Amino acid sequence: MIKIAVLVSGGGTNLQALIDAQNAGAFPNGEIALVLASNQKAYALERAKNAGIESAVISRKSFDDPAEYDRAIVKALQSRQIDLVVLAGFLSILGKPVIDAYPDRIINIHPSLIPSFCGAGFYGLRVHQAALDYGVKVTGATVHLVNEIPDGGRILLQKAVEIQPEDTPEILQRRVMEEAEWKILPQAVAMLCRQLDQKENKG
Ligand code: GRF
Image (cartoon, rainbow, N blue to C red):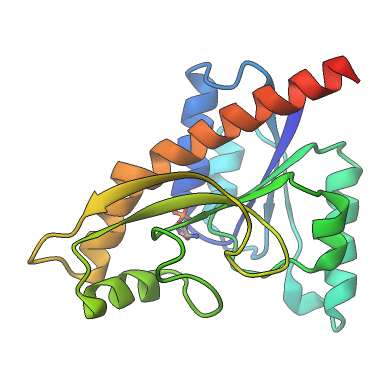
């Protein structure tokens, strides 16, 4: 069984999509074992509590040294034998200690079709504002592996979403979540759990 940690900073609708998928039996080879928040006020923590999932908060602000923060995250993950790390609206950028501890085992959901509108500074509504400003007619979401380049790891899944003439960043953000993020993130988690479980059973 693959133990999954979901890292969050905000509302946690992607976390909710994962919880709902788990309850519907979508992860026969995995279970969400930990929700780790970068911020005590994240509503995602309520969602974890309602689902009976263990949660913890590690706030970047409590660490002067970013490497210390990374080490605290690794410790929280390793002490619970986490196998797969899912960034679902996690706003801190993870450093080398975390990436090295979980090679090809950290995934992120980004609300655009990478390589468009991604990288440093592209988060939240800014991503959708940039897509509208550019005038693209199609956007979407991407699940990718995490490496040291922001939004730069190997792409696992993408789904396109059409832009409508009257879209605002808020309306577009919601449509991208509903039509793409909440679908491909659980799909990617199911796929990786299956692959990692097979690997473990062979090894
Ligand atoms: C999502 O749009 C996700 O793609 C981005 O941050 C947002 C998080 O939303 N990385 P939520 O906390 O899952 O509701």
